[in-house]
Length: 424
Image 1 (cartoon, rainbow, N blue to C red):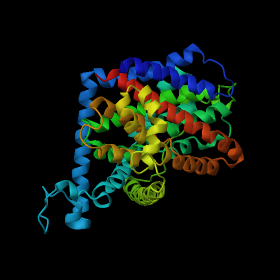
Image 2 (image 1 turned 90 degrees about the vertical axis):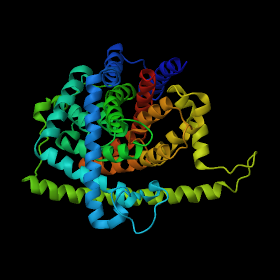
Image 3 (image 1 turned 120 degrees about the vertical axis):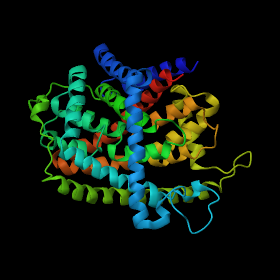
Image 4 (image 1 turned 90 degrees about the horizontal axis):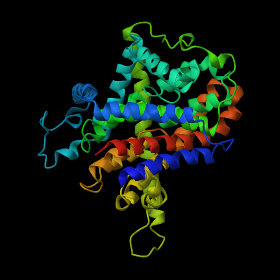
């Protein structure tokens, strides 16, 4: 039954893209074949091939090593507040070790460390080489231009503003459709700088959390391209839009490895502070809004909350991904939290659910569906970033932005449905 739900869901998500399309016409079968084919191919490689699963398990152990190394730094700076009770003597007895996991002292610093590691990998051109590889696959299979392929592939590893910055000279000459593809990919994926952060949060609820998060970001990219080309169909590419990937310089201006470490630390500190501040503000605003909603009388005596309202609105979407209806309101609240607030709060809520609230399969589906930047806060960040890079297209970027929120959300929903189809 869940497989039929997921197949129906994929059909509905594509149909919704057609409804929101600027031309309201059925997509070409080659586009559907390429988009769905790449999604299923990437997902099958992860879910069915033991060799790739072993590689992802190695990456997961690498995450554990990064977390341990980060703890050495947090212990030095924050003392016992930055360490696991199993590894450090606390000046008081610990009844619940989980209570010592303080977000600011033990989790957020992972963003800082991974940002520095990303800068080092970028300096040694390891990440650019991987981006070129993914870009080649996307260009050959989905027919996107070189500049768009680079941006789409880079979105799997870096943020929604940083990846378009790699093709900044080309943005003003991209067609409207190509610009929308760039924006949609930014909404449908997450940055590599927060992958480790999210995987540590989710390690208590799913095995190989990093593997699932990385896979979700990878398979959402072709879905985002496909849905973007349905919603804003391709036009005759302009000369600059046809540029080959080799013509797109994605080098860095790091002078040496110490420069990469220093600037990575500076960038990571800003990101860590922004994430922490945004979390504090959003959690406070949600609590304030829930207090106001509790004044509204509803049958049954239970207080009305924002999460409950999200559950009602997004429950049908989660059911279409393959989640049983009895779990759909709870899953819908997670999807709503991700869309209206951000994916970090949704991941935190998923990790804090009582045991058995969602089945193992539903938990995996929601991990894939939540894994994207498609939310209203990110919309503002993307508009500000892209208009700053190409002010002459500001009006067009603002006009396309709401559509990119829809395409990014539909892409992650398709990713969740495919995860549901391949999870037994």
